[in-house]
Image (cartoon, rainbow, N blue to C red; front, side):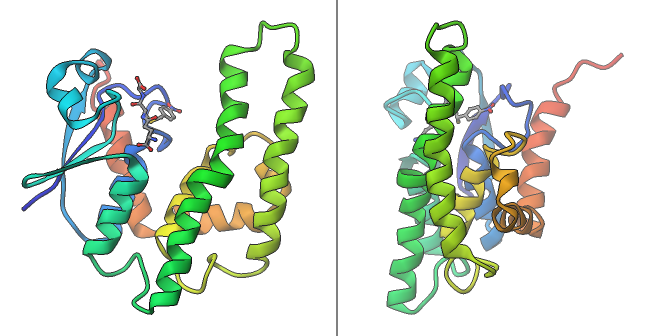
Length: 217
Ligand code: GTB
């Protein structure tokens, strides 16, 4: 049965792999599972057919037969559980890979999003110039820990896993910020993730949604 995921009909990042269907696409490509995509407008995301699938009216969702999931991390975990290639067989190594999935989404991503949100909606506030460096320091605290742990390794725990897939996805949000670039091993780690053929296929497919929608002439 071919799973169906949902994605933005018009992504604010113009298909640069930042919307959260990207990790789902990437996971499906890594395990070689073909999938279909249902594109949604912002208003369709808030209407009842989609709200049945996603209580918060967001993308991505994942449908496979009578199973319907939301939350990109849970969807990646489901894919990794059902297919070989994203979680190790050894029970302890598997538990560590799952730990990195949670670390990506629960520990590394929150300060990155807080900084992004401040830049999006607080620039006109009187406190913005004082607050931004504080938020950036919080991001650096996380990157310091991650960079020390990664060291010279290619991936966080031996072979590439769903933990790396989510961590690379999260770190990509910092590209061009000048923050990630101060950590050469993390920049190289992100580049290694992006160089994976499965990543490239997922990225190209997400980008094609945007480019194919452009009016010609
Ligand atoms: N925790 C959920 C998950 O991981 O699945 C979060 C899902 C989520 O935030 N979905 C966003 C959404 O549907 C799209 S991905 N937003 C519409 C809404 O809430 O009404 C977040 C996102 C969107 C766009 C960019 N971008 O263009 O840079 C980056 C991230």
